[in-house]
Amino acid sequence: MSISTTARAVDLLQRAANSDLYYSFRSSKMVMVAALVSFIMIVGATFSPILAPHNTLDLASISLIDSLTPPVWMEDGDSRFLLGTDDQGRDMLSAIMHGARVSLFVGFASVIFAMVLGVSLGLISGYAGGFLDSFIMRAAEIQLSFPAILIALLIDGIFRGALDSKTHDELAVYVMILAIGLSFWVQYARTVRSSTLVEKSKEYVEAARVTGLPPFLIVFRHILPNVTGPLLVIATINLALAIITEATLSFLGVGVPPTEPSLGTLIRVGNDFLFSGEWWITIFPGIALAVLVLAVNLLGDWLRDALNPKLR
Image 1 (tube, one colour):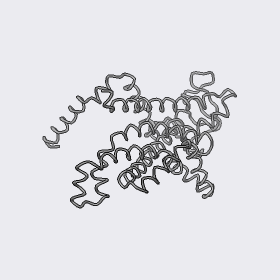
Image 2 (cartoon, rainbow, N blue to C red):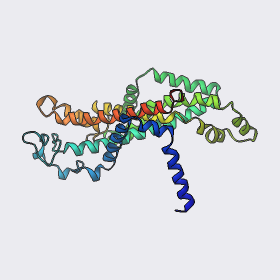
Image 3 (cartoon, rainbow, N blue to C red):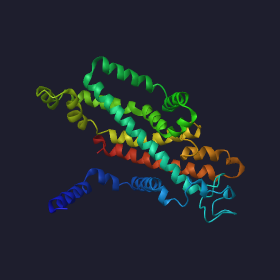
Image 4 (cartoon, rainbow, N blue to C red):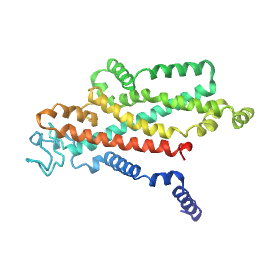
Protein backbone atom coordinates (compact mmCIF):
# COMPACT_ATOMS: atom_id res chain seq x y z
CA MET A 1 0.00 0.00 0.00
CA SER A 2 1.44 3.38 -1.05
CA ILE A 3 1.88 6.31 1.30
CA SER A 4 -0.87 8.30 -0.46
CA THR A 5 -3.30 5.40 -0.15
CA THR A 6 -2.47 5.02 3.55
CA ALA A 7 -2.93 8.75 4.09
CA ARG A 8 -6.33 8.67 2.38
CA ALA A 9 -7.39 5.69 4.51
CA VAL A 10 -6.29 7.46 7.72
CA ASP A 11 -8.09 10.64 6.65
CA LEU A 12 -11.26 8.67 5.91
CA LEU A 13 -11.13 7.00 9.35
CA GLN A 14 -10.59 10.37 11.05
CA ARG A 15 -13.54 11.90 9.21
CA ALA A 16 -15.72 8.93 10.18
CA ALA A 17 -14.63 9.21 13.82
CA ASN A 18 -15.52 12.92 13.85
CA SER A 19 -18.84 12.49 12.05
CA ASP A 20 -22.22 13.21 13.63
CA LEU A 21 -23.31 9.63 12.89
CA TYR A 22 -20.45 8.09 14.91
CA TYR A 23 -20.99 10.59 17.72
CA SER A 24 -24.65 9.63 17.84
CA PHE A 25 -23.69 5.94 17.86
CA ARG A 26 -21.22 6.12 20.76
CA SER A 27 -23.55 8.42 22.71
CA SER A 28 -26.14 5.67 23.10
CA LYS A 29 -25.16 2.59 25.09
CA MET A 30 -28.34 0.82 24.01
CA VAL A 31 -27.46 1.24 20.34
CA MET A 32 -23.92 0.01 20.97
CA VAL A 33 -25.27 -3.08 22.74
CA ALA A 34 -27.74 -3.67 19.90
CA ALA A 35 -24.94 -3.39 17.35
CA LEU A 36 -22.77 -5.81 19.34
CA VAL A 37 -25.60 -8.34 19.71
CA SER A 38 -26.45 -8.07 16.01
CA PHE A 39 -22.80 -8.54 15.06
CA ILE A 40 -22.36 -11.59 17.31
CA MET A 41 -25.55 -13.25 16.06
CA ILE A 42 -24.82 -12.52 12.39
CA VAL A 43 -21.24 -13.82 12.67
CA GLY A 44 -22.37 -16.88 14.64
CA ALA A 45 -25.08 -17.66 12.08
CA THR A 46 -22.90 -16.99 9.03
CA PHE A 47 -20.09 -19.22 10.25
CA SER A 48 -22.33 -21.78 11.95
CA PRO A 49 -20.84 -24.70 9.94
CA ILE A 50 -17.52 -23.88 11.63
CA LEU A 51 -18.57 -22.45 15.01
CA ALA A 52 -21.53 -24.69 15.89
CA PRO A 53 -20.68 -27.46 18.40
CA HIS A 54 -22.53 -30.06 16.30
CA ASN A 55 -23.52 -30.43 12.67
CA THR A 56 -27.29 -30.75 12.87
CA LEU A 57 -27.54 -31.18 9.09
CA ASP A 58 -25.49 -34.40 9.18
CA LEU A 59 -27.99 -37.16 9.95
CA ALA A 60 -25.18 -39.65 10.62
CA SER A 61 -24.04 -37.61 13.64
CA ILE A 62 -27.51 -37.47 15.23
CA SER A 63 -28.73 -40.18 17.59
CA LEU A 64 -32.31 -40.67 18.77
CA ILE A 65 -30.88 -41.85 22.08
CA ASP A 66 -29.96 -38.20 22.79
CA SER A 67 -33.46 -36.91 21.98
CA LEU A 68 -35.28 -34.64 24.45
CA THR A 69 -32.16 -34.14 26.59
CA PRO A 70 -32.75 -31.12 28.88
CA PRO A 71 -30.33 -28.16 29.14
CA VAL A 72 -27.04 -28.80 30.89
CA TRP A 73 -28.04 -27.07 34.16
CA MET A 74 -31.12 -29.27 34.62
CA GLU A 75 -31.29 -32.78 36.04
CA ASP A 76 -30.34 -35.40 33.40
CA GLY A 77 -28.63 -32.67 31.37
CA ASP A 78 -25.65 -33.56 29.19
CA SER A 79 -22.51 -31.41 28.98
CA ARG A 80 -22.37 -32.09 25.22
CA PHE A 81 -25.65 -30.22 24.72
CA LEU A 82 -25.60 -26.81 26.42
CA LEU A 83 -29.23 -25.95 25.59
CA GLY A 84 -30.50 -29.53 25.37
CA THR A 85 -31.72 -31.43 22.31
CA ASP A 86 -34.96 -31.69 20.32
CA ASP A 87 -37.09 -34.73 19.56
CA GLN A 88 -34.60 -35.91 16.91
CA GLY A 89 -31.54 -35.60 19.13
CA ARG A 90 -30.25 -32.42 17.50
CA ASP A 91 -28.24 -30.03 19.70
CA MET A 92 -30.45 -26.96 20.21
CA LEU A 93 -27.58 -24.45 20.26
CA SER A 94 -26.27 -25.77 16.94
CA ALA A 95 -29.79 -25.93 15.49
CA ILE A 96 -30.41 -22.29 16.49
CA MET A 97 -27.15 -21.18 14.84
CA HIS A 98 -27.96 -23.06 11.63
CA GLY A 99 -31.57 -21.86 11.76
CA ALA A 100 -30.52 -18.23 12.24
CA ARG A 101 -28.29 -18.61 9.18
CA VAL A 102 -31.30 -19.56 7.04
CA SER A 103 -33.47 -16.83 8.55
CA LEU A 104 -30.82 -14.14 8.00
CA PHE A 105 -30.16 -15.30 4.44
CA VAL A 106 -33.85 -15.12 3.59
CA GLY A 107 -34.12 -11.74 5.36
CA PHE A 108 -31.14 -10.10 3.66
CA ALA A 109 -31.92 -11.56 0.21
CA SER A 110 -35.60 -10.56 0.32
CA VAL A 111 -34.72 -7.01 1.45
CA ILE A 112 -32.18 -6.65 -1.38
CA PHE A 113 -34.73 -7.98 -3.89
CA ALA A 114 -37.46 -5.65 -2.57
CA MET A 115 -35.05 -2.70 -2.66
CA VAL A 116 -33.95 -3.35 -6.26
CA LEU A 117 -37.54 -3.80 -7.43
CA GLY A 118 -38.96 -0.89 -5.43
CA VAL A 119 -36.19 1.56 -6.34
CA SER A 120 -36.44 0.68 -10.04
CA LEU A 121 -40.22 1.11 -10.10
CA GLY A 122 -40.01 4.30 -8.02
CA LEU A 123 -37.49 5.85 -10.40
CA ILE A 124 -39.55 4.89 -13.44
CA SER A 125 -42.77 6.14 -11.86
CA GLY A 126 -41.33 9.46 -10.71
CA TYR A 127 -39.38 10.25 -13.89
CA ALA A 128 -41.83 9.01 -16.52
CA GLY A 129 -45.03 10.29 -14.91
CA GLY A 130 -48.34 10.03 -16.74
CA PHE A 131 -50.12 6.71 -17.15
CA LEU A 132 -47.09 4.67 -16.04
CA ASP A 133 -46.83 6.62 -12.80
CA SER A 134 -50.56 6.22 -12.11
CA PHE A 135 -50.48 2.47 -12.84
CA ILE A 136 -47.50 1.75 -10.56
CA MET A 137 -48.83 3.87 -7.71
CA ARG A 138 -52.34 2.38 -7.91
CA ALA A 139 -50.80 -1.09 -7.81
CA ALA A 140 -48.79 -0.04 -4.76
CA GLU A 141 -51.88 1.32 -3.02
CA ILE A 142 -53.81 -1.89 -3.71
CA GLN A 143 -50.98 -3.95 -2.22
CA LEU A 144 -50.84 -1.69 0.85
CA SER A 145 -54.45 -2.62 1.60
CA PHE A 146 -53.37 -6.21 2.30
CA PRO A 147 -51.04 -7.34 5.13
CA ALA A 148 -47.60 -8.42 3.93
CA ILE A 149 -48.08 -11.90 5.40
CA LEU A 150 -51.16 -12.46 3.21
CA ILE A 151 -49.28 -11.39 0.08
CA ALA A 152 -46.46 -13.80 0.97
CA LEU A 153 -48.95 -16.62 1.64
CA LEU A 154 -50.64 -15.97 -1.72
CA ILE A 155 -47.36 -16.06 -3.65
CA ASP A 156 -46.20 -19.19 -1.82
CA GLY A 157 -49.58 -20.84 -2.54
CA ILE A 158 -49.23 -20.06 -6.25
CA PHE A 159 -45.84 -21.77 -6.36
CA ARG A 160 -47.11 -24.74 -4.36
CA GLY A 161 -49.86 -25.21 -6.91
CA ALA A 162 -47.54 -24.79 -9.88
CA LEU A 163 -44.68 -27.01 -8.65
CA ASP A 164 -44.63 -30.58 -7.39
CA SER A 165 -43.80 -31.18 -3.73
CA LYS A 166 -40.18 -32.23 -4.27
CA THR A 167 -39.35 -29.27 -6.53
CA HIS A 168 -41.04 -26.84 -4.15
CA ASP A 169 -39.00 -28.14 -1.20
CA GLU A 170 -35.80 -27.69 -3.20
CA LEU A 171 -36.77 -24.12 -4.13
CA ALA A 172 -38.51 -23.25 -0.84
CA VAL A 173 -35.87 -20.77 0.32
CA TYR A 174 -35.94 -18.88 -2.99
CA VAL A 175 -39.75 -18.93 -3.03
CA MET A 176 -39.66 -17.33 0.43
CA ILE A 177 -37.25 -14.66 -0.80
CA LEU A 178 -39.50 -13.89 -3.77
CA ALA A 179 -42.68 -13.88 -1.66
CA ILE A 180 -41.30 -11.63 1.08
CA GLY A 181 -39.54 -9.36 -1.41
CA LEU A 182 -42.74 -8.80 -3.37
CA SER A 183 -44.46 -7.92 -0.09
CA PHE A 184 -42.04 -5.10 0.81
CA TRP A 185 -41.23 -3.25 -2.45
CA VAL A 186 -43.95 -0.60 -2.01
CA GLN A 187 -42.14 1.44 0.67
CA TYR A 188 -39.04 1.78 -1.47
CA ALA A 189 -41.06 2.69 -4.58
CA ARG A 190 -43.11 5.40 -2.87
CA THR A 191 -40.07 6.92 -1.13
CA VAL A 192 -37.93 6.97 -4.28
CA ARG A 193 -40.80 8.29 -6.42
CA SER A 194 -41.37 11.30 -4.16
CA SER A 195 -37.64 12.12 -4.17
CA THR A 196 -37.42 11.64 -7.94
CA LEU A 197 -40.27 14.12 -8.52
CA VAL A 198 -38.21 16.73 -6.68
CA GLU A 199 -34.88 15.90 -8.29
CA LYS A 200 -36.02 15.68 -11.93
CA SER A 201 -36.90 19.39 -12.03
CA LYS A 202 -33.46 20.54 -10.85
CA GLU A 203 -30.84 22.17 -13.06
CA TYR A 204 -28.40 19.26 -13.25
CA VAL A 205 -31.11 17.00 -14.70
CA GLU A 206 -32.13 19.68 -17.21
CA ALA A 207 -28.47 20.04 -18.22
CA ALA A 208 -28.19 16.27 -18.72
CA ARG A 209 -31.28 16.37 -20.96
CA VAL A 210 -29.83 19.22 -23.02
CA THR A 211 -26.63 17.27 -23.67
CA GLY A 212 -28.75 14.47 -25.19
CA LEU A 213 -28.16 11.90 -22.46
CA PRO A 214 -30.70 9.03 -22.68
CA PRO A 215 -33.38 8.94 -19.94
CA PHE A 216 -32.04 5.62 -18.65
CA LEU A 217 -28.61 7.12 -17.94
CA ILE A 218 -30.12 10.30 -16.49
CA VAL A 219 -32.19 8.26 -14.03
CA PHE A 220 -29.51 5.83 -12.89
CA ARG A 221 -26.42 8.04 -13.17
CA HIS A 222 -27.72 11.37 -11.90
CA ILE A 223 -31.03 10.95 -10.05
CA LEU A 224 -30.46 7.61 -8.29
CA PRO A 225 -27.41 8.71 -6.20
CA ASN A 226 -29.46 11.65 -4.87
CA VAL A 227 -32.55 9.71 -3.77
CA THR A 228 -30.96 6.82 -1.87
CA GLY A 229 -30.64 8.63 1.49
CA PRO A 230 -33.67 7.12 3.31
CA LEU A 231 -33.25 3.66 1.79
CA LEU A 232 -30.74 2.42 4.39
CA VAL A 233 -33.19 3.16 7.20
CA ILE A 234 -36.07 1.45 5.38
CA ALA A 235 -33.87 -1.57 4.61
CA THR A 236 -32.75 -1.95 8.23
CA ILE A 237 -36.31 -1.85 9.55
CA ASN A 238 -37.53 -4.14 6.76
CA LEU A 239 -34.81 -6.66 7.61
CA ALA A 240 -36.41 -7.24 11.00
CA LEU A 241 -39.86 -7.45 9.38
CA ALA A 242 -38.58 -9.91 6.78
CA ILE A 243 -37.10 -12.18 9.46
CA ILE A 244 -40.39 -12.07 11.39
CA THR A 245 -42.38 -12.80 8.20
CA GLU A 246 -40.17 -15.75 7.33
CA ALA A 247 -40.47 -17.10 10.87
CA THR A 248 -44.25 -16.70 10.75
CA LEU A 249 -44.54 -18.55 7.44
CA SER A 250 -42.26 -21.32 8.67
CA PHE A 251 -44.24 -21.56 11.92
CA LEU A 252 -47.41 -21.98 9.85
CA GLY A 253 -45.72 -24.79 7.92
CA VAL A 254 -45.47 -22.99 4.56
CA GLY A 255 -41.88 -21.78 4.87
CA VAL A 256 -38.61 -23.61 4.46
CA PRO A 257 -38.72 -27.44 4.77
CA PRO A 258 -37.78 -29.24 8.02
CA THR A 259 -34.63 -30.58 6.34
CA GLU A 260 -33.28 -27.00 6.23
CA PRO A 261 -34.84 -25.49 9.34
CA SER A 262 -35.03 -21.80 10.15
CA LEU A 263 -35.83 -20.25 13.53
CA GLY A 264 -39.53 -20.33 12.66
CA THR A 265 -39.39 -24.02 11.84
CA LEU A 266 -37.62 -24.77 15.12
CA ILE A 267 -40.29 -22.87 17.06
CA ARG A 268 -43.06 -24.76 15.22
CA VAL A 269 -41.45 -28.14 15.96
CA GLY A 270 -40.91 -27.25 19.61
CA ASN A 271 -44.46 -25.98 20.01
CA ASP A 272 -45.69 -29.61 19.93
CA PHE A 273 -43.61 -30.36 23.05
CA LEU A 274 -44.19 -27.10 24.93
CA PHE A 275 -46.83 -28.47 27.32
CA SER A 276 -45.25 -31.89 27.76
CA GLY A 277 -42.27 -30.53 29.72
CA GLU A 278 -39.70 -30.11 26.92
CA TRP A 279 -40.05 -26.31 26.90
CA TRP A 280 -36.49 -25.63 25.75
CA ILE A 281 -37.18 -26.88 22.21
CA THR A 282 -39.35 -23.84 21.42
CA ILE A 283 -38.32 -21.29 24.08
CA PHE A 284 -34.64 -20.96 23.09
CA PRO A 285 -35.28 -20.46 19.33
CA GLY A 286 -38.02 -17.99 20.29
CA ILE A 287 -35.61 -16.03 22.50
CA ALA A 288 -32.99 -16.01 19.74
CA LEU A 289 -35.55 -14.71 17.23
CA ALA A 290 -36.82 -12.02 19.62
CA VAL A 291 -33.30 -10.82 20.52
CA LEU A 292 -32.22 -10.68 16.86
CA VAL A 293 -35.30 -8.75 15.73
CA LEU A 294 -35.13 -6.37 18.73
CA ALA A 295 -31.44 -5.60 18.08
CA VAL A 296 -32.03 -4.93 14.37
CA ASN A 297 -35.08 -2.79 15.15
CA LEU A 298 -33.10 -0.70 17.63
CA LEU A 299 -30.44 -0.10 14.99
CA GLY A 300 -33.11 0.87 12.49
CA ASP A 301 -34.70 3.34 14.90
CA TRP A 302 -31.28 4.84 15.67
CA LEU A 303 -30.47 5.25 11.97
CA ARG A 304 -33.83 6.90 11.34
CA ASP A 305 -33.18 9.45 14.11
CA ALA A 306 -29.47 9.95 13.36
CA LEU A 307 -30.04 10.61 9.66
CA ASN A 308 -33.00 12.95 10.23
CA PRO A 309 -31.68 16.54 10.01
CA LYS A 310 -34.73 17.86 11.90
CA LEU A 311 -33.62 15.98 15.03
CA ARG A 312 -30.02 17.23 15.03
